[in-house]
Image 1 (cartoon, rainbow, N blue to C red):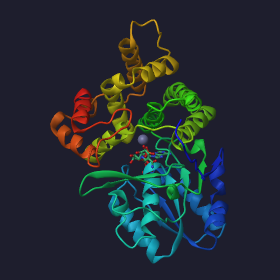
Image 2: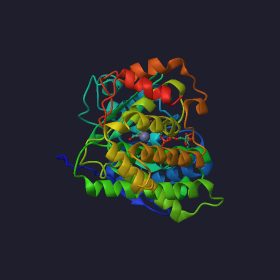
Image 3: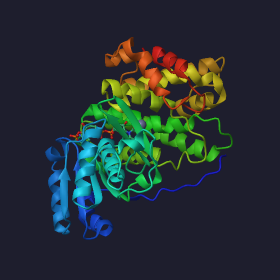
Image 4: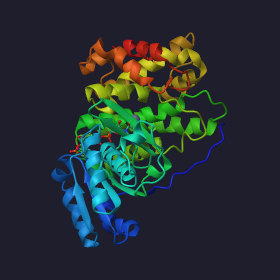
Length: 390
Ligand code: NZQ
Ligand code: ZN
């Protein structure tokens, strides 16, 4: 097991009607200071959440400004606009109401608000975060895990770079998780969320770190829960609150890092996926269901016993299969079958992406050097994975 320090300060307020507490909670963290209420497109207006948040903030005497319009794969241009608003209005806290895109945009603005230079510096690794405004969230989609993670992922629409910045100061001060707020999600977004949550667990599970049995078992439990509950949530004609609770909580636990803190994690599949969504603007979860099976096929021989353990403990593959190759191949088939029950793409062609830009994506995925840890991947490895995914 690796040495580690675990820090996850986000206060989670979970359950029915919890969003109604937002006014009082914001007041606890912002005092009399001004707040930026940040959100995405039309979904929170259509669901009525927008008005409820306004009422709760006003009811608690919170002074706030609004900035909506965050797009999926959140754009740098709007982040810069949010930074400007924060600086000009002496904003003391940013309240993000939405999914990973809104939360990540808020985190970026929180960094930029206390920085004299351009906020993109933090993403292109030209500056190290040392301060940020507090960010609080009301989550409306279980997926990215940004509600308790230390990460923010932003797309520079001019250069087509989608880059992340990770720092503990980006963990939200509180996150409100009311699973019933997710009932309005389109099926496609439910499926993308499930794919991302599973990926966050696999990125941690596939490691060469030895003697991590506790967290292995915890991740296996999380994966089994997700594989069980996500298809039910996806197919349900009327939402089942308890299923949604398990789906949402798995999403948060998958990425708060408590299940991965003791090990060297991989993250190559995420890096490769970010190149796909940067260039083609597809949903992150849809990119991951394309990349992960190809990544496993490319790398598993570097640590076959880890993939056999995953196959047996998570996908119940019978050890009587003739060898590790057959066991892992069967597990990958079962993984792909899971994606298909959610109508997720498992090949680039399923997402109407051809081979034209594979080399460009491979080159960008290793812009900071080899990617991944279970196997360090160079440009040719990434290209081979993208070709497998065609
Ligand atoms: O914009 P609105 O109208 O709100 O619609 C959104 C959006 O179109 C919609 N939606 C969200 N909640 C809804 C809803 N529609 C109806 N009812 C609701 N309750 O869903 C769409 C997708 O939202 P988005 O926020 O983009 O989804 P997600 O949470 O999957 O976030 C994806 C982003 O997070 C990044 C991804 O790369 C991507 O940019 N990630 C962030 C991470 C982090 N910060 O730790 C880690 C992840 O690995 C990931 O990279
Ligand atoms: Zn992800």
